[in-house]
Image (tube, rainbow, N blue to C red; front, side):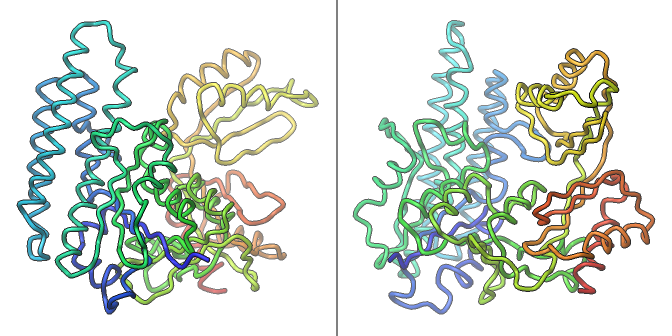
Amino acid sequence: MAIHTVEKIGGTSMTRFGELLDNIFIGSRKSDELYNRIFVVSAYGGVTNWLLEDKKTGEPGIYGSFAAGKNEEWQEKLENTRAKLIELNRSFEKLGLDQTKADDFVNERMDGVKSCLLHLMQLRSFGHFNPAAYLPAAREILSSVGEAHSAYNSALILQKFNVNAVFVDLSGWKDDHSCSMEENISRQLSGLDFSKCMPIVTGYAKCAEGVMAQFDRGYSEITFSKLAVVTAAREGIIHKEFHLSTGDPKLIGIDKVRTIGHTNFDIADQLSDMAMEAIHPKASKEMERNGIPIRIDNAFDPGHPGTLISQDFVSPVPKVDMICGRRDIIAIEVFDTEMVGTSGYDHRILDSFAKYGISYIAKNTNANTITQYVSEKSKNLQSCLADLRANFPGAKISTREVAIIAVIGSNMKIPGFLSRAAKALAESDINVLALDQCMRQVNMQFIIERADFESAQKALHRELVELQ
């Protein structure tokens, strides 16, 4: 039976590495207590934005400028990023980071990336090479730099504290071996005795299919999941900057929210749909299938057990786990008097959604109306709408900016939750535009005006959590 854990640390937390030494990596642990833990680390906060593009604003980083063919611009950004990575090294000097080794590592990687991209630019100049053939590879190699940098530094620092830390580079740097992620992990971990060493693993893992191509910026949690499954871990732990709570502490108030404590994978999926990812849904599935529970804890609240996500947990007491929501929702309403009694009408609508790679978050129907709620950030949304209008010339197709507030819990199958929620919203003068709830009763979704997004969460949290 496995006794080790696989633990993931995010980029914002990694920037606060001194605190992580006290809270997670070392703390009061001594000798053997330090081991049987594999750590998967993300790039330091902001680094992947510099390498690719800003996740929030879309401002191009090195990759964005390279993909646009702006030769001088991407090279300038590469040198600026090199300088920023070396500046990050300086911030860990007091922790014992060997500055020469750390800087040499940065320069070797950035020189290699620059050489690679220059060769690709030369190929592009001949006009016979399709960018679609080499841009994905360029994005992959740039992505790998951030995690390799933070993992390498972490291992160096831990070694200064007499921890037998081992840098495990899954990035495939200068490795022409093509294999699956599972094979890559097995190969790089081969020969390591987890009871005697602490593997520090890159959050980026090279695979034949391309991890960025499959999962884009969520790849580090996929690596975390694969590591847990391949090594048959006892538990997976995700260290975040906050607890998984009953609501947003910044909105509701840190004194009013509660740590969830224990929930199940189904609820984790519901949270993911609301963009409140406890873990990437594709990462959690493999761990769920293999019976590996996931713990979400606050990296800066040592000793707190956090939230355990397991397969079969159902709260013994009816309660709400979380109030959350999304304000980036577009309602797509198809109204057609010919719809009533027509078989397959909704299937034809979904054909357009599938054609343009759009998934819906909620759905309402009646005799002559079908409304789908999708993220306004969905790619090809306008093309999908044009396709719907062409395929349904007799229908009235309209869109509306809305928000969704979700009331989520593993055990809400008793009378009263829905009526209490509706009453709380009404007493706060919030109009419910639509309502969505499945018979399993783990997620009540209220579609409301965007202007009511924050006040609705406060009202529902007060009624269903604070007064519970």
